[in-house]
Amino acid sequence: MAAGSTLKSLRNKCNITVRQVEQASVRIADAKGDKRFRISNGWLAQLENGKSEPSICKLFTLSVIYHANFHDLARLYKVDIDEIESYESIANPDVTQLRPETRDERVFNVARGSTGLVPQLTTPEVKERSHIRHAYVGLTDYMMYPLIRPGALVEIDTTQNSIRNAAAWHNEFDRPIFFIELHEGYACGWCELQGNQLLILPHHSSPSSVRRFIYPREAEIFGRVVGYTTRCVDPEPHVLERASDSKQRLRSSSR
Image (cartoon, rainbow, N blue to C red; front, side):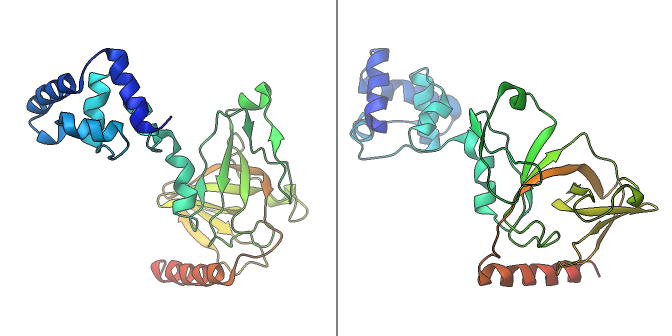
């Protein structure tokens, strides 16, 4: 059903006329001291016929008059507040960031040590793993390249947030990869503590440089990466150019 038709159904369910909606909106606008909340009966007719779309103020007014949830009315126009976090990696694909945890029955679970995409059906046991979070590696983040390429998804165990002695691992696959929370965002890489400094170390084949932060004031270990999915090819050339520019800016800001 079209959005306008749904709004008309809500009005009919409340058993009120377009004139009564206008009168109620005038009272709301007067109480608000803002005429943007006012709805004329002519404009409402256009809205219900699909010839107009409501502003946020008028949608608020309709939600009050129709006793309807504001978010539900916004969804009629493909505006879902709950989707904001889901679109952050689309709006800012260069940035490494946490992903919102979905309640959908089918989520993207990352297989441990995976190098391919392995969607799995969520079980109640998986849903209860509140200590497991997922994150996205930005398209300009080459810290763990080529082991974890830009655009990868990583699975993080937040209970594993302490750095082990180097003697505990024997190769790069055993060496713990951590997800780090910074003041300006997040990072993913090998870690080492030197006094009060936390070093985020790149893969030895990565073009990235070592990053240093005062620990834990400037950086905290969010958790250990226990699984990941990664591309089997490098990003497009223009993405590599953005990565190079980002690296230059990072170097300049650290001087």
